[in-house]
Image (cartoon, rainbow, N blue to C red; front, side, top):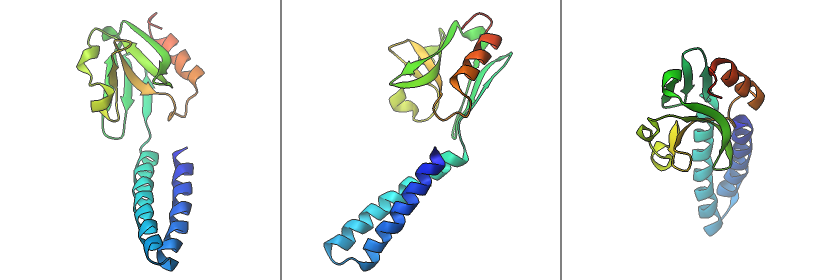
Length: 148
C-alpha cells in the first residue's frame, strides 16, 4: 500500500516538475509549491514503507514495533483484548487498568494510544499489517488465555 502511494506521488512530482521547468510566471510558482509538498509526502511515505508496523503476539503478551516507538502489553496487565473499530479503522484494543498511562491520539502520533471512548489502549492498527484479521484473531485466541 505504501509503495503504491510512493510510486503515484513520484509520478505526480515528475509531472509537476515539467510545470516548474516549462511554466511561466504564477504557474511556475504554484507548480514549485506543489512539487515541494509532493516531495515531502514521498519522503514520509518512503520512510513508512521501509519501516512498517510489526505486531507480535506470544506467550508473554502483545508487542508492537512502530517506526519510532514500541508498545509492550504483558498478559498479566490485560483484562480483555479484542479487534474492533477505532475511529473507523480496525485495531487491536486492550482493556487494562493502566490504559490512562498511554497518551491520547492527539499526543501519541504513531504508536499505541489511549482511547477514552473505550477506556482502553489501541495497541496496533490492522491496516498496515501483512497478516489478515483472522490470523490476528486466532493468535489472540490461542495466546490470550481467555482474554479474547
